[in-house]
Image 1 (cartoon, rainbow, N blue to C red):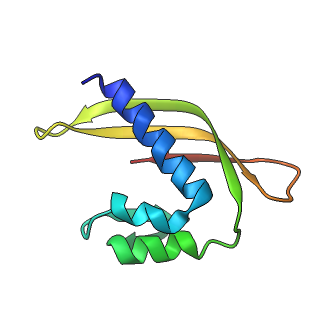
Image 2: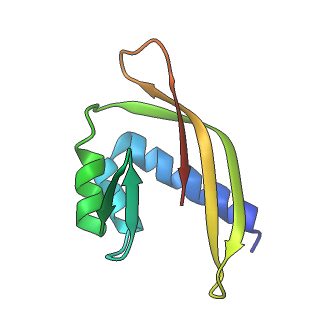
Length: 101
């Protein structure tokens, strides 16, 4: 498989799910997954999903500008870095964001 194609498909799925049904992201996390968000750390599916679903906005739209990936570890994993803009409903200006997975 082409790592860039896998990363692009993952990013499209992740952010379309984030924008439409954040609770649906739970299937993408495991008990040993970790989310670092603005200096706080959340570990495990339930903790991460709770944080994501409690964010202070209901509707948003991610506009991805970059997706970079590289192989990671002997088991065929990869690190994916994403950056772009986040448009919140009712807000005039988009926010910049970046995420590594």
